[in-house]
Figure 1 (tube, rainbow, N blue to C red):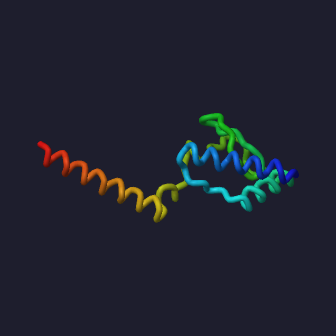
Figure 2 (cartoon, rainbow, N blue to C red):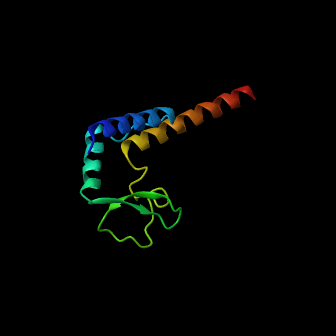
Length: 105
């Protein structure tokens, strides 16, 4: 395992997050752990049966007819406090916009 490759890869990940305007969810410690788990053959890339993209999965999980998290999000997806706050903020913005349109009419 080369530390240089890990740090360059992590910088590339951060640049991608910044370019796509998303918040990084992976810190350097977790990236290091993921690399170690791949090196130890604990994790592998598994192909989604719906979209055919590859995603990280446990090596000993079932590999037939598996679906990635993008095609079938977990039941908890979108139910965090952060997601609820974002929904509430979006609803407030829509209400303000509707009120402005009503005033202009």
